[in-house]
Amino acid sequence: MSTFPEPVNLETITGNLADAVLMVDNDKKIVWLNRKAEVFFNAALDEAVGKDLVEITAIKRLRYLLDDVFEQQEALKCSYEEASVKVKKKDERFFFKIAINPVFHQGNLWGALVQLTDVTRFHELEKIKTDFVSIVSHEFRTPLTTIIVGVEMLKEGMLGDLTPRGKEVLEAIGADCERLNRLIDNLMELSRIESGTIYVEAESTDIADLVEEAVRPLKIQADKQGVELITDLPPELPPVAADFNKAVWVLANLVGNAMRYTDPGGTITVRVRQRGKKHFFSVEDTGCGIPKEHQEKIFRKYVQVSGPGRKGAGGVGLGLAIAKDIVMAHGGEIWVESDIDKGTKFTFTFPVYQEKDSITLPEADQ
Amino acid sequence: MGKKILLVEDEKNVILGVRTCLDAVGYDVEIVENGEDALNAVNREHPDLILLDLLLPKVDGFEVLRVLKGDPETAMIPVIVLTAKAEEEDRQRAIDLGANNYMTKPFKPQELWDRLKSYLSE
Image (cartoon, rainbow over all chains, first blue to last red):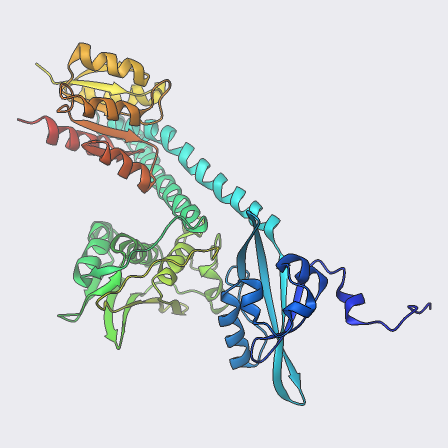
């Protein structure tokens, strides 16, 4: 074994790291930074020491993330998206993934090590994917127009008589066109959310109107399916702070899901209750339920749950991912409780409207 | 006499679909496949209503709207936009330019008939 000719020090170890690494004390003042951080933030070590971390990096979010780490005395636990930032430097944009680990001295919280990994390339790929999804869904609309118009005219017998079997086949084509159409809408919605071009404008919204708008179009289908669709709202609920169309979308999506998994004779209940400054919206069914191991996963993109008793769902697993994005953009939460063969209950919260309430989706890349 | 509708659309299959849809309920249909021809046809044919795609060769649908709605001679002709562009900013832009209605593709014949009826029944 050969030995390094001089004592190994921090600079030797971190000097060629591709990540910017900064150490701060528990007052968020810089005590040390590596070469990459010096270059990137244009601050020499001796100038930077003693300065505020946010002052040197200009990444405001670090302050809140550090507060979290100091409070919990644990490493930053958040997803890639939540812990990435956009940094502008000489007209160039960089994206960094943030990792923060607390540093202890003699058992006491002393400070933290902040590590910034350049993920710009990864972001570019995400953008390409998002744009692609948008273009594809867009390109699907035109051919689908010809198909839907043709199918509808044929179904109505406006282009001649059909055999009963012919009619049945056309009904099936029509239903699948609807499905494709929904899928395209979902993909569009998702690409808008991902590209950060969607924003939520929360206004004072009447809850009865919102629920009615979401449930009404589904009542006919519920009747056909032999499922009872109940709404349960206390009278005189104060308004909710919500973007009407998006909130309707979330609720309709949950009820639509419930219908897919509920057999004839079952019940779906849409309920709203106020607790403090939050409205709790729930959609409860008497369907087949979701296995415990899947309950966490279902809010992720492109996840579909299959298993005994689950009928062919007919989606690509975007609905709940979008619903979660929308709810979170309102400052709410969404979760699921479910028992196999008993039913499933989705609940989400929206804030009660207060004067001067205006929530806009935080820019995804802030 | 049937009302005259000018369909401005460049996709052959969509033209067939929409034309079939309009024939079925007895409208007269005139078809042009780009924005430039659309502007000429409006002055020549004096349609009762225009169905306008936005992505068109030569002069695009937004420009057609701008010209038609800026000219007192043609500003009163109702224009229903029929487009695959589903983004809110496109809808807003078309409405700002004076579009009377905005339909996103795909649509069902009934939706089209309902809207046509609301502009053409008097």
